[in-house]
Image (cartoon, rainbow, N blue to C red; front, top):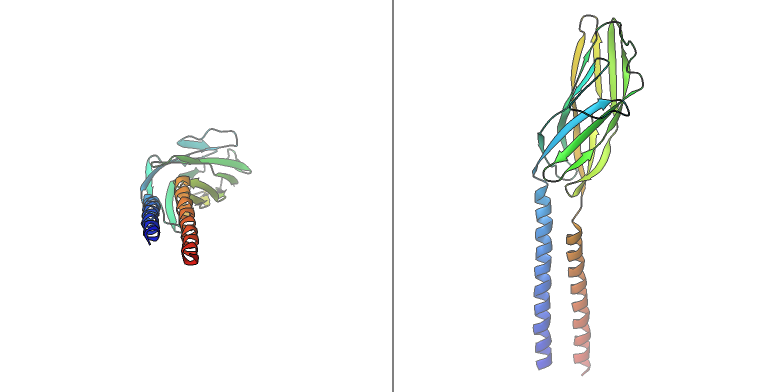
Length: 219
């Protein structure tokens, strides 16, 4: 009976330790989830051409992109799309110059997310269209991009842009927007390690308790 009481006391102590570890893991997971409600600051820059260096403002053949500086948004919950602004485009039709200037051109865009964690996403787009003396049309086609940021996997889906001008209305502007969606929450490696340690400890102690119980029953 003394041995059995001693085992119960030791086993109870181990179980309390495992409970504390599991509580700590739960707190870490909750803290990680709460971090996704924080405000994120971001910047956008862009340029035209495959070998260009993105800048806050870039112009090519009467098409101008103006990025954002120190914009903010709230990190979305998993599988919830959040609309974000990325800048704006303006198109000017000035006459006979470069009538088919945009056919096959490219646009490089960089979106830099900072605070709490910094990362840079570099979407690219194909710019097609033309400007003539009597009007113009420019279409910018973006592809979605996936990346990791702030402890989760995200998808950035930038909306396509269509700009047109006419003989009488020679300017057009269009905002560049997109949606940001968190596709999965990823716990930190230390959190996974503590979870595995807790599960292994519980299994090991349950196995020992079963063997001890069988041994006492046999005696």
